[in-house]
Image 1 (cartoon, each protein chain N blue to C red):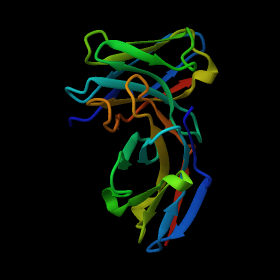
Image 2 (image 1 turned 180 degrees about the vertical axis):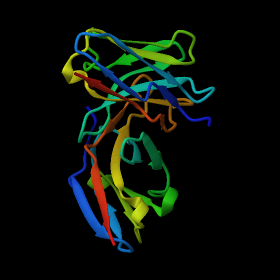
Image 3 (image 1 turned 90 degrees about the vertical axis):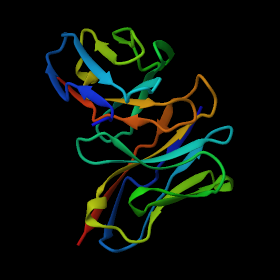
Length: 115
Length: 113
């Protein structure tokens, strides 16, 4: 069974500082990996995805993530955060074969930005 | 707006009542997914459809829950005899097919009193 661990429940960073959110996954083959962001009371917006190829993927809003197979990790990074980045961030893993297309999400990391 | 839409956005009901939620996916997306999200947790998969066929159901989907997608377009999720534990955000997502990302709607927040 696939699973995702986001070890940090809550992270606080200063505006302009760099950010790294951790994600570890468990899956028996090469997974599909995603980062979504959720603002309070809202649905999920896709930040970026990894399916194959280049292990460093670029997303929207200046975010990037790196897939490291040896560490089963897919950490999200941003070089300089903005106050508008405050939200809940979810890492998700998906299977690559037909009939098992559900996403399995981590419990999320809440990001607070201080001025 | 051509994104995934869900109605209603909020629903308050009394325990024991039935409720139905609707999801309209992005046009021409043949996959449609339902997830449930409780406070402080990530979304949990409930079920998904390819066109009108329901291909997978989670063990979370008890026999009080039923989902349909009769014409392969919009979908409904019905909960019968609601319980307080059903209080959650119900999220719908759609996808153009296998190997593509899922696009989420704004969700329906259910409160069972």
